[in-house]
Length: 111
Length: 113
Image 1 (cartoon, each protein chain N blue to C red):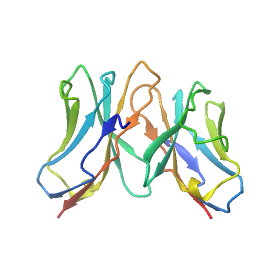
Image 2 (image 1 turned 120 degrees about the vertical axis):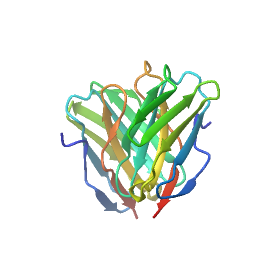
Image 3 (image 1 turned 135 degrees about the vertical axis):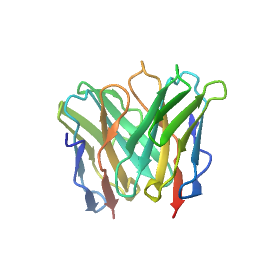
Image 4 (image 1 turned 90 degrees about the horizontal axis):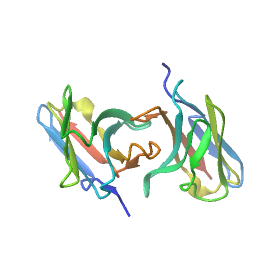
């Protein structure tokens, strides 16, 4: 299996621009998670889906962040408008039961 | 409120010796615990897990111990190898509550040749 796939791997953008991060989970997994990692806050759960339905989005920082999962093989995390404090590494993970399997992450830099 | 804590930000060990990474938790509802390893510029990689019905789980050089009364778990790596140098995260979940993981802050392990 190819594992969790994320794109892009790196994104540099200017403040105010829209950013879209993409994730393809492992086939057969029914849970999908979006995390953000920063030096200050470590690994934070932003939102997770079960069977394509958002279950808990309490970790989403504010209304500028949104996530969708239109089907079992694709999810997006969108930031609009982006701000410098959004600079971080964003990970997607998927699971069925038990362990979550992480993608390689998207390193986002907002100037 | 940190429900999962790794109090040692870093650990240095000589190659061939044992590495012991520690993790404490506060939520008594947690019933499933995991360890992940993370290299720079990569996502966390699942290493080993343990259910609360057990107190030990072993997989090759990696053993996880769980002490429920102390709300403490540890990861033992023996013998340690330079390739084990990475950041290690412990994580915990309540299995019937949505498969969410709560992560500790991580411990950076350095194994010196």
